[in-house]
Image 1 (cartoon, protein in one colour):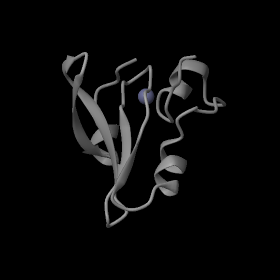
Image 2 (image 1 turned 180 degrees about the vertical axis):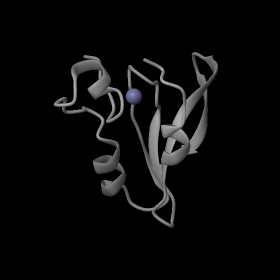
Image 3 (image 1 turned 90 degrees about the vertical axis):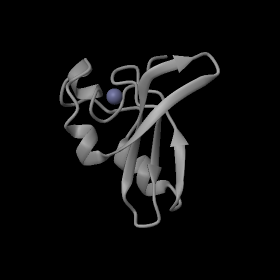
Image 4 (image 1 turned 120 degrees about the vertical axis):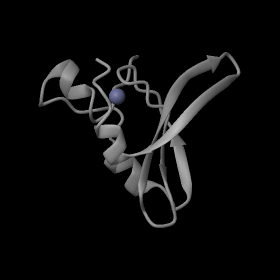
Length: 87
Ligand SMILES: [Zn+2]
């Protein structure tokens, strides 16, 4: 089943949509200095992470991918929100 993040679910299903990948809820549940793998079918975000200062980071694929090696770039939420829409 396709999963969509906090940002893509409303674009797909409208404002009432409940995202399968709730970025804030997932990041709040993370211990500091760790990350959780996700896969949003909309924007392609690959992981959600948090550093030891509680800053949330989003891993976005760089487009430089192969089957066993998926390169990502870690963005802060602010940087992520400034990305051009991918849907
Ligand atoms: Zn997304």
